[in-house]
Image (cartoon, rainbow, N blue to C red; front, side, top):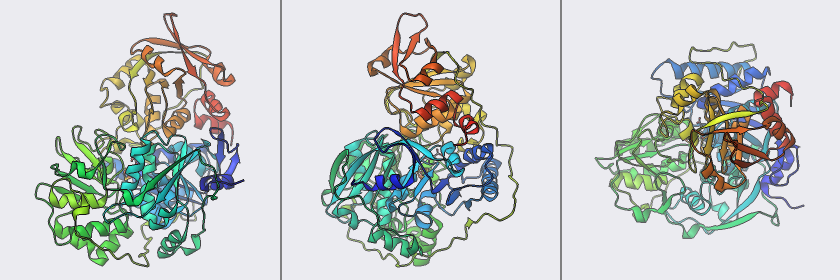
Length: 639
Ligand code: MIC
Ligand code: SF4
């Protein structure tokens, strides 16, 4: 039978289930990655599972998010993660070595292998023909312990690329175009495969920009074929031996097909406050701007940075604009510096930041009040920058650099042509990646690390009040905000709990504490965005028993199940109107119904009406929910 590229990799890694869309499949995981904001929890969970060493081919613990050390908390977490990496047999990438996805692409990604990472942008490595999926920390911990990773078998979407990008039109514009077509929920339950003649005109880092922002489509992952371009990239990284050619069968059947003509694209921008609110840059041209931030796991490769340097060279950043540049990895920064491009950026007035997520996760560089900030990043959710009323526009590095010079939104296609020289050989220096020692190591824990909340097996009947009602496209940034003030407490759930839904409803946390929790009612695509399992663990701590929504984003739905919170959907979306704030409801015989798969009803306490809900859980999900979460379930059944 003909198979798509992703289906081939899935078939080679299938431990359980059928490859029919929607059915639960188990995948053997070859590699894992964690970053520090999700890693502390993942290693606490791994430790609680009692497995002595990781069982994957390769697992890497990165420090890239919480690099601002304004108190002991982040430094303690770094030390804890390093000690856990050394104890359990992982490589440890030190702060300053770079953003997990950029470093993983350069140093570890291998075509045809599976990777899960406790970060939603893990699909970046799909740019190298890898099946790379973002997951909650607990799923990553289970995979490190040798357990399979479970997902519903995705549908397959093919995006045919034709033509070739014009000067100053970039991979970022390609993915913004796809976001305009498919929207932030268009990819849910799907894998997006790129194919067609246009593929061979794109370098591996350009492909990675596109697969990175597949996360914003809500897609399970995105993937490019592995071809001669991939081989050249691996060779330049000194890893020619990791190359395998891979592509989908020409007659493979897809569930949907789209075509993007690269030659017809123009520079695009995602306007506030959603990555799919896309407009041509030419329509925004002339708008006054305050800040430009270049970097993030989407656009921080050497080629991106060299293009920025070439545009800045010999020019000056507008006096009213703040330009920051964060190279994606130590390799990129080193090569920029050795080749002189860094000097061109500095001379133009750029503020050079360390190789880390930085402004992308609100670790500094919050814009001024009401500010307009152009960023080469992947998310522009309201308030994520740290300034509630700032407007963040997502653009390519070329648009960002051209606009920084002009001080207004600028279409870079008006610039004189530039050319950059990419080296045949990258400078490889893995000194900031530590190998685990061959002797027992103690885990070092600081006072900021608190135990994670316990979940109980599902009770026979649940009675609860609606403590919050929200609309469509609620992000995990709404549920559990990040930023420099809160991120240091990612390993301290009790402390974090006071910020839950802080910007949406500042009373939420107090109300839950007073009422002993309750249920949340939500619209479409609840929990889109970041993979942070804190958006499930904190509600668990606050006593949330169920979230009833019109639909869920994939990773967050899995995180809720893993935490033992019921993610239920309305059988009729109009019933969303009937479930009101502060009213009490009953879920009668919920444990029995979850077990048998029979229809579930949300009964109003008055007994006057009930709302039918979908009982759409896989067998494994049912067992996890009954056990009160994945940790309990894993302890009960070694998978
Ligand atoms: C993000 O981009 O939102 C993050 C920070 O990288 C998150 C992970 C986290 O919240 O720790 C993600 O994308 O999963
Ligand atoms: Fe870091 Fe931003 Fe990428 Fe998340 S999206 S991994 S915060 S650079």
